[in-house]
Image 1 (tube, rainbow, N blue to C red):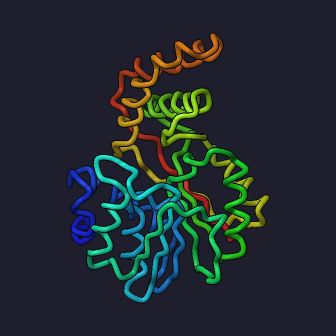
Image 2 (tube, helix red, strand yellow):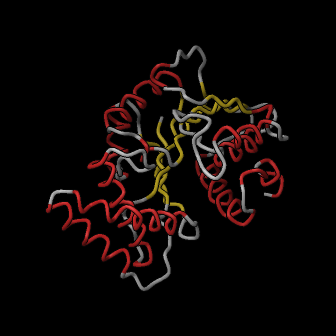
Length: 265
């Protein structure tokens, strides 16, 4: 893992980065990525999964990593700063980053072995947008490997993360902000969208993510926006107050939701 940390050394705290990379490496292993593969990564963000993919495909493989966001998006390190650091690392020649790129508007002349969507679906504004992505992917990739937070939490320690995500999704629905969570997709919805796009489900898997910091981060952000719901209709205030109570009354340490993986062809 040390060589991957070096590839992302600009991105921040070494402990946080090691924890995040450990999870991304577990996702890539579950995707069954092989050396020499050509990978299309949608929603690459700051490149956590990108470097794990690039390390796995080896010198003969390649990653085309795209994201809708601007290279100036993100804090404390922007997407552009992260991509620049990775590009100048030992893995840089295997990766091509392209930001401010709408996959649906992208002319695709090449075929990929695998398309990867790793923890990016909650950014989609509408389920129809995600379905359109899947339909286009059917023509440009042999397989799709999809990972996202699993809303079916199995431990009381994950309840706060679930409640925080729900609060943030409701906040975006009501106030149309620019937060990370625009929609929450259950794994059954993702499976159905893939099938509707013409894919056949190959495998499904749950990957432990309880040790990640994301749950605590989302709880902090949800608490920041709770006050804004005073402007919301009374019924929404009731729902959000209940979620907030459940979130902040959790006595166990905050553990992140697990990740689910669906692979389809």
